[in-house]
Image (cartoon, rainbow, N blue to C red; front, side, top):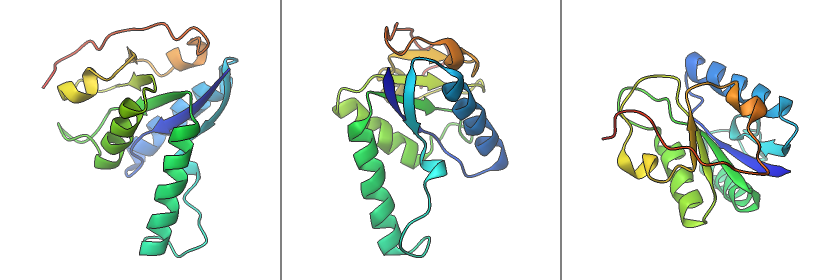
Length: 146
């Protein structure tokens, strides 16, 4: 059973809808022990968007990445620019030897630093309902690489 960290942008209604559907798929998956999605954990002791709030959120998220067995990411973004926070989380995961499983619903080119760090890739959010997180079968990126 896997502990998962969800690395995803959630700044527009489209992005929020996508990550909500991903969270629902993970909730339905019997091989998922639990997941941490930063979208659901924006509350803090400090006022939102202040420096103390940012420090608290950063340390909490980094602790959750460290505790995760697997990183699940959404790599849909605006044009060809991956969300900088998501990219940072994926870099931390890569350097921590965490497998990265990616969802991309749009048909945008993806930077090679992201595609080469992926363990598994899908274009269908429903695949996360049935993916076996105990086996972690690999699957390569299919699409245009930048």
